[in-house]
Structure formats: C-alpha cells, structure tokens
Image 1 (cartoon, helix red, strand yellow):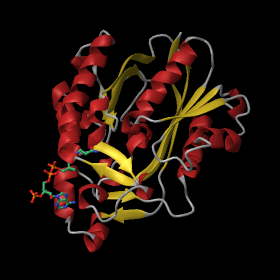
Image 2 (image 1 turned 30 degrees about the vertical axis):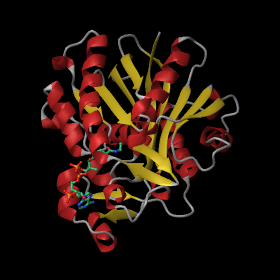
Image 3 (image 1 turned 90 degrees about the vertical axis):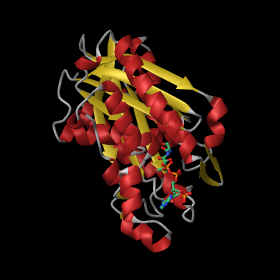
Image 4 (image 1 turned 180 degrees about the vertical axis):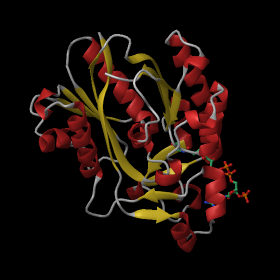
Length: 310
Ligand code: UT7
C-alpha cells in the first residue's frame, strides 16, 4: 500500500510587510534583501492570530480538499517551533477545534524541516495500516520570536501555515522515498533564547551542502535519475540556497518552486504553502515526479521524492 498526499491547504495572514517597511525601522535596504535573499515581502499575523488559528485554517482547507471528514483522521501532527503554549500542543488544540474526535495528536519540533518529518511519520502510520488518514500541519508565527532590532534575522522570516492529509493513493503514486537527518552539533547556529538567534553564514554553508545532497539521495532511493524529476520544491529560506539545489539537480528555472518573494521564510510552513500555490498555478500535475527538500534548526533536514496524484 502506498501513502501519498490526498489533500492540501494553506493559510497566509492578510497583512503584508514589505522590504520598504523594514527600511523604515532597520539599517537595511530593499536592494540588499532582494539580492541576498530573494525576499520582497512577507505576511505578518496580527496580535489576535496565533499559530493555532493559522494552522486551523490550513487544516480545514486540506480536509475539504481531501474529501474526508474530521472524524476520519486518526492522527494529527503539527510541525512548529512557535506553538501557542509549551503545552497543550497545537495539535491537541486543532483536534478540538476541528472536531477530529478519533484523532491522537502531537507536535513535532524539527524547525524548518518539520513538515518533512511530519509527512514521513504520517507515511509510516498509513502504510502500516494503523491510521487511514493523518493530518500534517506546518505552521509558524515566527514574528513573535523575531528580534525586530536584528537586521541579520528580522528581514528573513514570515508567518503562515500549510497542511496536508496523508492517506492511501493508487499504485505507483505517492511517496516513493525519503531521507531524514540531524546534526545536533550544529544546534548553536540557529536557536531560540527568548528571541531567535542565528549564525547566517554557518547555516548557509550547511544548507547549500545538505539540500543538494538530500535531493540527490531521495531520487536515487526512489530508483530514479535526476532527469526523471519534473519539479523541485525546496524550503524557501534563501533564493541562493534554493538555486544551489536546483543546479545540483540540473533543473531549468521553471522546474523549481519559488514563493519566497511573497512569503519570506515561513519555516515549517514554507514547503506546503509552495505546494498549494504551485498546484493552483498548474505547475504540479498528476504523475509528476516531485522532490521536496528542507533543512532547519537542530540542525535537521528531510527530503521526499513522490509521484503526484491520488
Ligand atoms: O530556515 C533556516 C533559517 N536560516 C537561513 O536559511 C539563513 C541562511 N543564511 C542566509 O540566508 C545568509 O547567511 C544571510 C542572507 C542571512 C546573510 O547572507 P551572507 O551572504 O551570509 O552575508 P553575511 O552574513 O556575511 O553579511 C554580509 C554583510 C555584513 O556586513 P559586513 O560585515 O560585510 O559589513 C552584514 O552586516 O551584510 C550585512 N547585513 C545586512 N546589510 C543590510 C546583514 N544583514 C543585513 C541586512 N541589510 N538586513
């Protein structure tokens, strides 16, 4: 039996913060942010909108898109490093709000690779026959842990949510292979101590190396060649990191997802948000081979190769 994504959804808060807005409060420029990161604007949630609200909205859309009922969900996994509270988990809050009365629920902490960790965990439960449907949500309100006086980080991040229902798909489709990994010795390069702290250079070097490596590994594990890949969805952290993984796979520009200019780095939400926008724009079609790859604080990384469609 194959597990795959049978429904997806997203939520982006309406308020847009542009690079020009940041120029007003920080010693930075639109020119620097665009060329060094690819970001033009990001969404920022208002004070009334917390992580669980954004996650709920994305989850509702994914459940509708999958054509299932909340009671059909056996497990809810929420990947986030910005939960409403240390506990209860965001996953249990969503379980209640959605009326998913048959679901177990827990959060996953793997930073920007969290959605990859969630999907791979969901796949195990679906393919073992334990749960028919697992809801995976990647959601962050990074604005609440951003140090708005630190130009090294304040320009990078945004808020948002993406979700997917993992369930059974037809033979040949779904998740073909995956890789998860961690290197805790690099935890010091990206962490939260009240506010988010980062050694950008070190994270950049790690990301360029690991994103390409993991993408190549999952293609090989799926028994495919680079030429078989129709589309790459990298974690939207920095256009230069994304470009390095695209070049590693030898893919043309139009075969890589790019939503970073609109949303900035939304951490665990970036890959599912991109997937939803790409599907809406017809960039991902049934039977396409797509590679999703992410990295983040921990350090953590994860990649998935899948054949799209139910
Ligand atoms: O999801 C994972 C989260 N983290 C990441 O993905 C971050 C990965 N790292 C990066 O994306 C890059 O390291 C950055 C975009 C953060 C920085 O790019 P860089 O090529 O590593 O530049 P740098 O940190 O070496 O800084 C170059 C210069 C420095 O000035 P000096 O020392 O050369 O005079 C910085 O102070 O750019 C300066 N700088 C800025 N200038 C204008 C740093 N931030 C800014 C800014 N505006 N916002």
